[in-house]
Length: 66
Image (cartoon, rainbow, N blue to C red):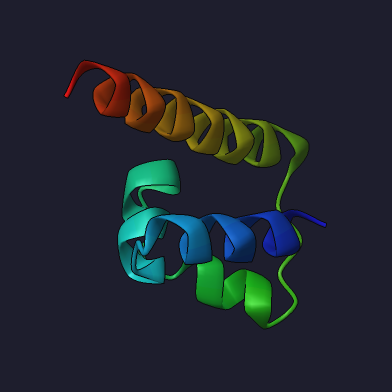
């Protein structure tokens, strides 16, 4: 489930859920809505997964070059 992957991402990064929603979907309530049962569209799921993958890649690259 998408919310499970998001919750893991939030724990790994320490990112607040409202910031995640703003950055990934331009909706600060996105994560809370998922927690309350909202089902995102396929395109939204892909966009969120893409955001998480890019964020992790950028974090690894910054770690390597720091």
